[in-house]
Length: 54
Image (cartoon, rainbow, N blue to C red):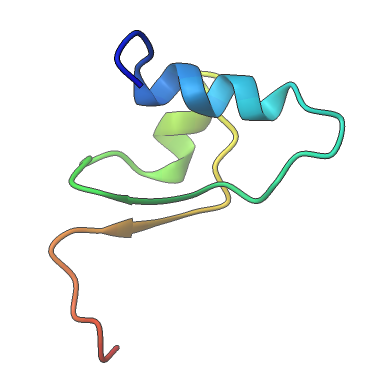
């Protein structure tokens, strides 16, 4: 989405009455706790690079 950051997308999902699980595959160095400090509700993060067989 050209006019929204990833944080904006996550925040908009959080506002839904039937919120989907939020999963990130990202190169962020953040932990879930860090994201929560920013007001983001993330269920889990898969950090890149990752091994698909795991």
